[in-house]
Length: 359
Ligand SMILES: Nc1ncnc2c1ncn2[C@@H]1O[C@H](COP(=O)(O)OP(=O)(O)OP(=O)(O)O)[C@@H](O)[C@H]1O
Image 1 (cartoon, helix red, strand yellow):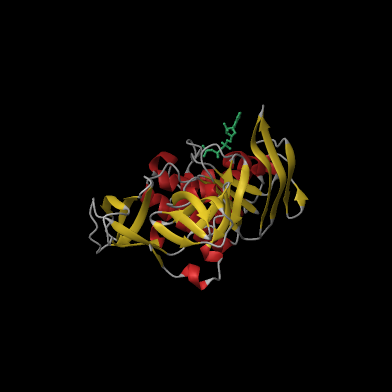
Image 2 (tube, helix red, strand yellow; image 1 turned 135 degrees about the vertical axis):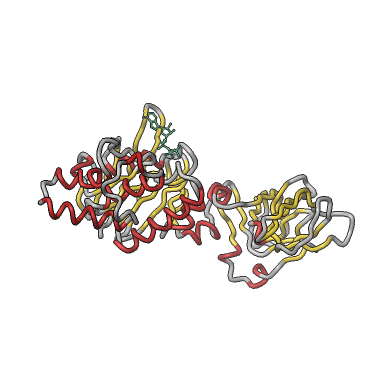
């Protein structure tokens, strides 16, 4: 068990800050996903923590010890990269034992630890195989075992399953989460997959342009996004722009009372927070696409001002292209200048929480 503290960590390449004075505390046994679009600085941050990239500023502490300037092999960290990078001329057991042999451990101890690591990743009995005799998923398991066998205090995973197909990726990330929880190992996991982050994290750090936009539990990142960027990046979100005047969001398709000051604002709606009913007149949003996903339908709507938003409806719903609807809204959030000014999930006001029907 260990605690990782990153303080004002910075990496500048010429004029750009790939990581821009980021501070982060990862608690004992916690798994934090670094989530963000391509180029947001996730890998650079992880590589600095692992010792593979030299910071241009800031500090990295593990259990209070400053490791900022130590080489990778002198840090209590284990890193797994996107490409497995196994030694092709060595057996699976040889790959896993390599780091232990550098530590000059007795042969019997090495053998026991390799067996332990192999069974931990579900590859008991595979020790004598060569890497080319394994599937991509099995090779990544070996890469994970090779890291874990050294019993690092901090596990660093850089998109470890990005090259695998979706089903395998889902299975492996669940296995990694199980192993991580069983060992109680403090972990940073880089991904640009929001599903992956939501599925396995204790907390998610949403990165944008080298900075943390929001650091929160998956539930809060999804339901209480603090910035419009986070709201749009995690899950599906529809945005509608209009004026707030006289305590109402002034949009022809929505009659929404809001307790915020007057001025332009952006309303954000999740598909599952929109309820559809048949329109009572010739006006209102129109269905432009209805897709059957089996478990539910997704209905794309064009609003009166031309905006498009998505609604999720029950599998039994029968909406078709061209249908006119009226909207009811459950949870919603309001943004101004990219920052949240109101989130109905945070509002104790019962009036705001009950369905609001177009009036
Ligand atoms: N060696 C380098 N030299 C110059 N710029 C670099 C170097 N490495 C990374 N960068 C830049 O730093 C920024 C962050 O890159 P980084 O690889 O950390 O992002 P990322 O979020 O991991 O992206 P991805 O998801 O595509 O891997 C990018 O703008 C990238 O172009």
